[in-house]
Amino acid sequence: MIVTATYGDGTSRNVTNYSIENGDKLTAEQTKVIISYTEKGITKTTEQKIKVEHNYKVELVKEPTCTEQGYTIYICTACSTRYKGNVKEALGHNFIDGICTRCGEKKPDISVESEEYHVDEGSNIISRITPNTTVGELIENIITNATEIKVFKDEIELGEEDIIGTDVKIVLRNEDAEAEYRVSIIGDLDGDGDADFLDMIEINKYRLGFTTLSRIQELAGDVDKNGKINFFDMIEINKFRLGLTNQL
Image 1 (cartoon, rainbow, N blue to C red):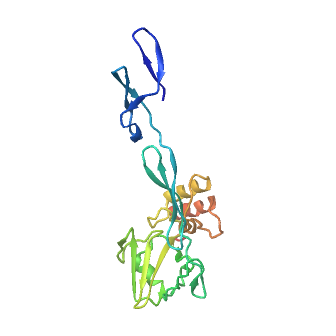
Image 2 (image 1 turned 60 degrees about the vertical axis):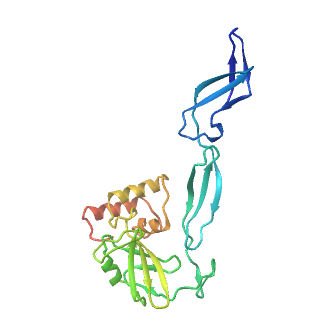
Image 3 (image 1 turned 180 degrees about the vertical axis):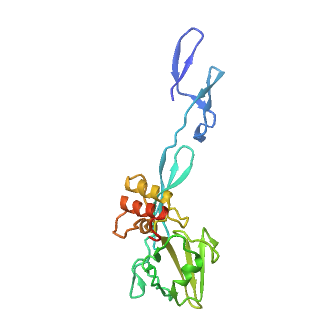
């Protein structure tokens, strides 16, 4: 900032020994500052309009683990505002001979199989579930040695008649072990349990490069099971929402 002192005789000069009220604690919301300058025992103050912009730098990098997301915390050097970005999905366990090669965790003694759905024990994801499936229908189509199965959305337990959406959590327990799985509903990228126009929008944004998808969303978006998420998956969802096909 350049501060200029103007004198009664019409002369002026740039000064450096000025002070700014709370100048070391500026915030992005601040629109003005008070500047003071003293010379020969006389102090002058003035109000100056300003625009403070965030200047972010990396404060913390957390790498993803088998069960937790990775992310980067950025902090503004001007006002200490923080935000979380560069989020990376959890890696998922990679069990070989019952031991995860990444974290050393022992594979839980909970078995999960299904004749209707695809069960990936490496990532603990149950996919290829049809839209508008209820909790009761999901449990009915799971073969497990668990004696207790509970389904949660945003940490709220769902009832038997509730519709499950992509990324709901299934907790399976028996006397000796516990396991958690996430579900992926065919065509349901937004997690409402249905495959509709909003999901078509999400796929279109992804294929045009405007957004990214999590692994669970990718499984949901690959409606035609060709390993790609594209316009053809949108067509399948559109046929389903218009009633031209009964299932995906």
